[in-house]
Amino acid sequence: MSYPEFTTDIFNYLDKQTLPDTFEAAVILGSGLGGFVDQIKNTSTIPYHDIPGMPVSSVEGHAGELIFGKLKGQNVMAFSGRFHHYEGFPFKETATPVYIANHLGAKKLIVSNAAGAINTSFSVGDLMVIESVIRSNVAISPRGNKRHRYNHHQWVPKVRKIAAELGLVTQQGTYMYVTGPNYETKAEIRSFRKMGADAVGMSTATELFEAARLDLKSSAISLITNMSTGVTGEKLDHEEVKEAADARKDDFAKLVKALIEKL
Ligand code: CYT
Image (tube, rainbow, N blue to C red; front, side, top):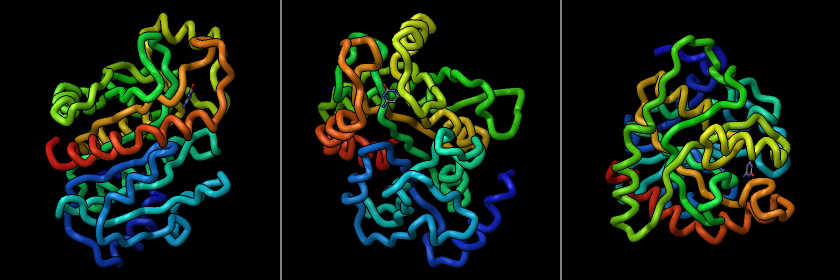
C-alpha cells in the first residue's frame, strides 16, 4: 500500500491506540453534518491536534476530531472536520482521513459534503448521490497519477435503493469541485451547468480519488444547502448552509446508518 510520507507519524500514533482490527465503515462528515456523531455509541474521541503529523486546521472552532465507536453493533469511525485545499493544505493532505480509514481497516468510506445546486430542478435540502466528478482544477490528484479512477459511481444505484427503502427521495448527479474558498460567480455557475454539473462544492474530489487508488470502496452524498450563485438571485451566506444542513440532519443520519449496514 502506498501512502504519502507524512502519514507515517499519524499511523505510528494510531497503531499504539487500542482499536478494533477492522471497521465496517469510515464516514467523513461535511459542513453542518457533524451532529451525526451523536448516533455513535461507546465512543472514544481523539482530537486531531493530539495526533502527531496530523494536518492542523486553520479554521477557528473546527479543530476536528476522529471518533471511534459502534453503530448497530458494528465498528465505525467518523471524521468530524476535514481538510480543504483552500485552507492551505496540499491536495495530498486533504485526503488524510482516507489514508487513516484505509490503514485502520475500514471496509468502506462514506463521504459527505454541503453543496450548492447548479441543477435548477434541485431544491435546498435535497440529498444528491454523487455519480461523477468534474474538477475545475485538474491537478487535484496528490500523486501525479496519469490515470484517474474512481469507484463511488458503481454504488450509486444501490445507495439510491437503500435510501428509497427508508422513504428518502434522492437526486443523482455530477459534483463540480472548485478550489474555493469564495463562492462561484454567476458566469462560472452558468458554464458549469453547460459542462453537465448538478452541484458545486469545495471538497470530496481528492478523497474519492485517493479512496479508489487504495481500492477502498466509496460512496459520496451531497446535501444541497443552497442554490448556487445566480440560480435564485439571492445572496449566499454560510448561515444558510448551516440551517439547511440542520433541517436534514436526521434524514442524513438515517441514510448513512443504512449505508454502513447495507452497502
Ligand atoms: N455552496 C457550497 N458553492 C456553493 O454554492 N456549499 C459550496 C460551494
